[in-house]
Image (cartoon, rainbow, N blue to C red):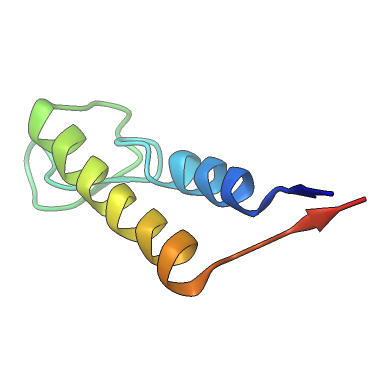
Length: 69
């Protein structure tokens, strides 16, 4: 029986938090920009910190598990 919870959560968060895909914090001209497909070093750091925080909450604090088989 395989636990797919961490894999699914990590992939979904990675896609949603890719800088510039849906939104970017901080943007080039504003604090938040939507769908501009441009990134900066600061934006990558902010999104990495948000990703780490959310994945920690979902996997360690809540303990999301999806079992197959």
